[in-house]
Length: 72
Image (cartoon, one colour):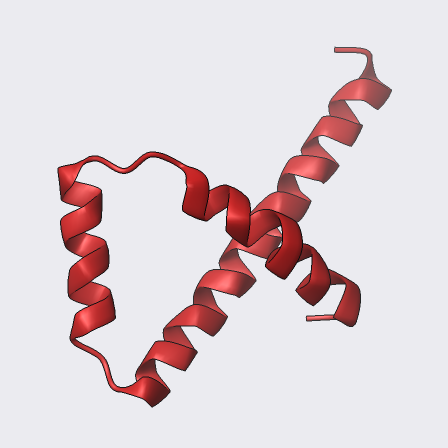
């Protein structure tokens, strides 16, 4: 990721995602992922989550921009 996207993820996207309410199933699955990993694997998972969340955010921006341009 570029420096700007890394900054955006750390200061906007990640806090937003972490602030979303989780039900019991979400909390259980998250604890399984966090507790059953080595430190190296945890870094890899965080990198994948950052990549996916950042690109999902960018997709939302592009989609919104296209909707505005098409007049919908």
